[in-house]
Amino acid sequence: MSLPTSLSELLEFVDFNQRSFFVSAAAIAFNPTFWNIVARREYRTKFLTRAFGGNSQRACYALAATIFSLGLLRDFLYERALRDQPSHPALQDPLVTYVAYALLAVGNLLVISSTWQLGITGTFLGDYFGILMDDIVTGFPFNITSAPMYYGSTMSFLGTALLYGKPAGILLTLHVLIVYLVAIQFENPFTAGIYAKRDKERAKAAGKPYESKKEL
Image 1 (cartoon, rainbow, N blue to C red):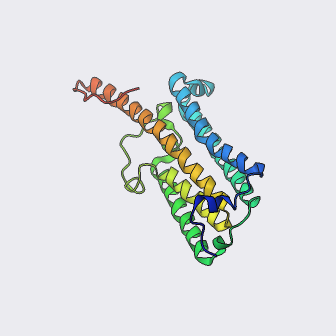
Image 2: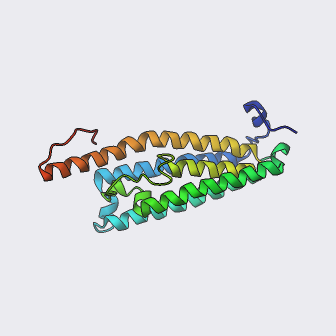
Image 3: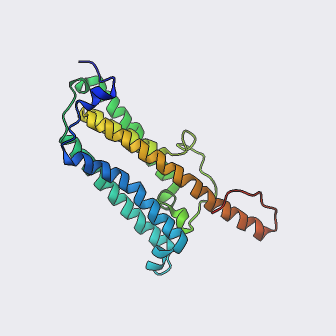
């Protein structure tokens, strides 16, 4: 049996009567929405920092633990959703399995290496807590893509879908990609504004002219 080549053929093997499918989709959309709302509120009001006695480092670690836990829950719900879905016979081919493992390997490499480069606070929105990086990270994997964690995560979702042979997983992966692309459109300009403000303050303190950039 040949691989599904159209969306309609793919949808034939998606059981939309399974509640777990929509629960998984909701969890996928919730996570970046949650951390963007919380991080922006922290930047504006410092409510988390105040809750931790003025210690921004501890507050950031608390948010990191929350985001990580939500990620584990999201992954659990995704796997559960896949188990409730029908498999496509063509996705049981050994070649598809090899592709799945390759996607999982590369995806995890991108996620782990970017976390290594950024550290915990750099990975988990430390910028919003006033914990800024000294310089822009340009080494691997940021020399490949500006959002290695998002694209690596997407590859892992797709790899898992192929490993299970579930077209529903491919559809959910498309949902993951769209959610992340939307998140990038919100996060990148906001983060750039944080660093532009920092650079302006540094230039002012040093008595140097500042080249105007977008600020918050």
